[in-house]
Amino acid sequence: MQSSRQPFSRAAVQAVSLLAAMLVAGCATPAATTPPPSPAPAVARSKGTTPPVAVAAPAQAIVAPPHAAPEPPQAVVAPPTQEQAFAAWVQDFRAHARGAGIDTATLQDAFALVQYLPQVVERDRSQAEFTRSVWEYLDVAVSPSRIVRGQERLYEVRAEAEAAASRYGVPATILVAIWGMESNYGSNYGSLSVIDALATLGFDGRREAWARGQLLAALRILQSGDIARDRMIGSWAGAMGQTQFLPSNFLAYAVDADGDGRRDIWGSMADVLASTANFLARSGWRAGQPWGLEVRLPDGFDFARADTDIRQSSARWAAEGVRAAAGTPLPEMPDAALFLPAGARGPAFLVGHNFRTILRYNNATSYALAVGLLAQQLAGEPGVQAPWPRDLQALTREQVLTLQTALNRRGFDAGTPDGLMGPATRAGVRRFQRSIGWPADGYPTQELLERLAATP
Image (cartoon, rainbow, N blue to C red; front, side, top):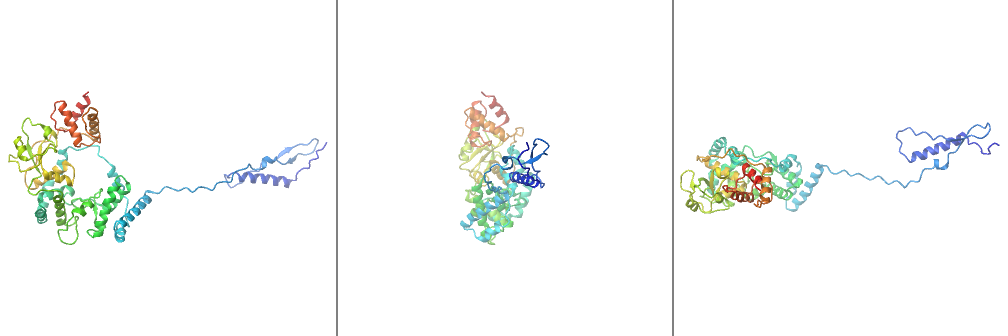
């Protein structure tokens, strides 16, 4: 019996196929511009000789599965670039500075072309793995060439140096020695924009509060007209001019000694030397007293007394057998201390109040010692007489950290381990040295570190 079902026309089949293709295409993203082929129609063969007919595909084959309404695409917000983040930090700081009294013209001058300096962050974050011994430091800081050059420069600026010395009570040789230490007599005081360097340090964030304070001080200097922005140059850390004042110290101590209405520690030697002398005078310099001198210690001296915290008059040290290396009587020093920068085997120095005043300028005993020794040789006096123990090797930061950890573990309190030799570490070393019968000079050596490691 022939089927009663009527065959679809070709047009109907094509319409159904096209509809199916459109529905499928609506649910998928095409991979190319050519549309996908229509699905082949199902074929049914009737009995007899009736030719094959095309039948419509089942409804589920041509009806797209239900989908939820597509969500709108979410906007992707890229994080700000470093340049954008730095610009935002500067904009925020400008608002802060404006509130602190900095005028619009100064802000525009300071920040119109401000730049982020990656080398400043690199220097700030870097920590030297190796340390130099004090004699290696002095070999450079008080080299023969620096002494000769300093004597020449002292002659050239004699009038300005003596004027500052007379006004503030600080010897001209001390002022020129600091000048030599800080910028090699003005030949190298940095080449970076102080504004850029401090803005970079503030943005970096490790020392943001400090950097913001110094940057605000720098803006006050610009606003006062002491220096133009393009001449306000210095080191990566923001120290400025020929004797390296931080901006806050400039505001506190800089002096207009030449009377031109500006405090110029970049170009005016009168201002440079007077400002440096004013800093030392207001930090406690005592006119007429020496910074210190090299001494000889008597046989059997208790090296534990060579501690900068043990202070007494030079007369009392003389009574204990301490003598000047030059053979002269000890100068009057009311609160002097013994300083052994290389331990019991190296030179000894009796240092007084003015040595500690130099530490206010740079809080490193090797720096203060270098200033004192350079100053006395600029005056034609001899340098260090006793030999340095050059066979000793300075400990690295990692070795000092190991030393501190080992001292603490064995009950010789060295403070919080940080890889730096401070008073607490030296005190711990002294206690350990006493426990094994060594001279308690507080000086760390490779041999002491090995002995400590071997001690149960």
